[in-house]
Length: 404
Image (tube, rainbow, N blue to C red; front, side, top):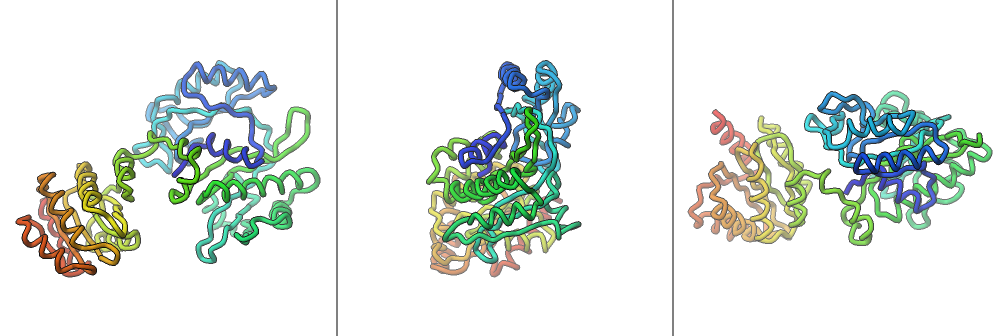
């Protein structure tokens, strides 16, 4: 699950990470009140930031033609003017795709006097099964670009999950960023807080870009999280009711929301061949082989290793709500999954929805004989695949004929 920047900063602050004075706002009246509080706090500038689940907001363009999802204002009235151009409008960035995202919340922040920008992130290194802290002096840039052009500027420190981040590791990371004196101590505390946020919130990623050295009104310098992104591990959300409440359904595709109600892993894609598969690895392989034979997957849909008949029926209904779908490939390898349960669910779903599209089914594994018998005796017009290759070729061919 993803959350907004302002929500991420609320979590970070809980674990001792310094963040700027910021106030979320959902209306122009709230924007004005927030901006007045910001200026009353001594800030000469007010930053207006669009809150969507995508990066590249500052360089984005609204479909109205207004440029930039992040603006700096010199007055309260200017902040409200920027907000008027953002709230309720669709922002397109390099991460949203052409459809963009509708901005329904703004973050009103004090304008920081930035002295230096850094990059800091915590994630799981699956190769060694350990948390990894990544830091770089190249803050404000895409870390992929830094890795490609100047990989030597990325510092990595692996953390022992049995003991968590040690003080010497926080100091080591801070030293790699070149900070000294009071800033060294502030940054070491900052790094520790970011790691603890990642660990305690069951996050898959905590990214601070940029982590900034800023000058305060009294002339002193400190370290703050000027921007923040947190992605949460769905499997750990049951332990965090407060974080679950941060979920913004407006940022999620309607079909993906519907799928989550049935514990189905669904992601809509831009193709026309729907996939219904059990297991994420097999689902990825299925999409690859469809692409290999000239087709285009319409979705990633993993019903899981132990799906029920009801889940299979729900999966079919979700697939058919995508108007781009011209054919369906069911690819099941039964380990824990009973092939006959899938077959029964397919029959029920097809009869209930009155499916007219080409349906190709490949079953293999646990109780496959019973599953194939159920399909054969159903009276449905479907095509069976003897192998994954055979099934993929047949669905691509069937969809091609239909398109013509």
